[in-house]
Length: 233
Image (cartoon, rainbow, N blue to C red):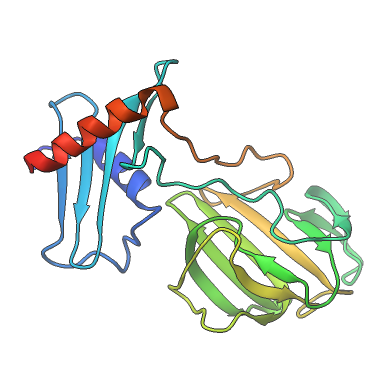
């Protein structure tokens, strides 16, 4: 349709927080792009049989362009810094750690949170469950995708929350399982990984996404423009 690759990439990045591009898209669904050619679109809209999502461009006082829902918030949420109430960190993210079971030095690209057996484990942010199963050394594990760039891993669980399966949507703070010691583990703790664009990052130091909002002073004007665009369609 003559839409440049940058715009397509932005559509995937923005809507991946609300749409599972692998499962949700159906024949007959539509994307509406409003704007001038060779400039950033002013409006992006997805219309499906069961869901409609619309975002509108807004430039803040620092000149940063972003896309926000009609409520003035970005589609992406803030992330929890830690996905459970823990006692202490038993093992940090490090490139060289002496493994207590294998008795060898190897990287530990995760954070281990020591906690009581059965402590609830929460989803770090809104997302879609990719895996919910026993996975070798990780034991009972849950993998959650968040948008198109982020993935979190929760391992050594004692059990999973009922009603959840691969492809289930979860909300930030929703209980997904409980602390245990399944797999290759010396005691009850949560093995937690944070992946960004396929690479594991340190959950304690990585700059996690924070939901942005249109400034209160601009919100009424922003919403008036958004409603006018929707009415015109």
